[in-house]
Length: 444
Ligand code: GAP
Image: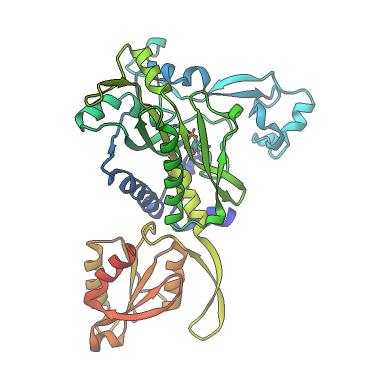
């Protein structure tokens, strides 16, 4: 993890938030390469979901009516037990003291359970994880709202708006990508648990009685999505929630977990939420949330199958999974260590790099022309400094799948060398085929 975090900063994937002020715990900024990778992850998810005829997209506001969070159960249930240290004022989750360390400067690195044994902690209290703020100029209870802790509720309250405007009938789904905020007591493991993060949620509305079938369907589909984008099957597993561990709204639940360097961690949850959400919003808003089937003349409250992935956590899983240190041959036949990010080509932040072999003989002009042509369709990087071997290494480290080199042969026959990142195999193709070549490989 340390190597990865340092590469992320050095190459511009992820920076600490407000770094020049010492950072803000649990918040991170995506740099030039990180934002491309994150956008590619979200784009893949969005395309997978909304290219289906039975899924519509939505983008709901972050601030919602405060009653939404009463209906959802977040005001009552979205809490963690917390204890405070009476001496240094550090705050810990009562159920995670065993592994926790004190973060306060004077006691940095001290094991929390030692302080607990010395009787320094308060009794456990429930702490709500929602961030509260105020609408309008007066900070009073009546104007309090919350930053949404999940994107799902924006979908539930719009169920009938989307259903009727897009003329969908259950079974159908609504997809949304957006920011969510949680005032986590213990932020940890880089992007894994943060206070501000993005979710990619799809809520699938089905007729009661068909819910188990759809639950199994989505559970499989979501696992396939991660596998299809190159994560090895040995690094992914399901974790089924025990009946006594299910969330208050769920009938059944599976997490998809990834094997991070610090152990297995949830990257997505698939829940059978029954008719809990729509029934609660009907009860709290006083507005009917049922679906009327014109054909069968039935009126019912759909069950919801939820697929809820963290965009930020998926980003981190793709990042961790791509990182390798490998032996690679140098141009003079020796072996050296290369750091390579084996991103799926569609996720790679930069799709192709263009190199003129030397900065003379008309090669830079041809290379710049090729770069401009490719840039119309892809994110491209132009590099004319240092030996070609070094330029390959720089691109390997950020996961660029294809490097195209203009050399003396290009001047004679208008071909370029394409070097593929994973195999390091080189082939020659016509320069006018370069864009089509990259496009074909991305969609192979
Ligand atoms: N609507 C259901 C829901 O929000 P969740 O299990 O609390 O369920 C879903 O969150 C996903 O959101 C998780 O699988 C994880 O990928 C991501 N997530 C949750 N809390 C997070 C946090 N503090 N930091 C980063 N990602 C988080």
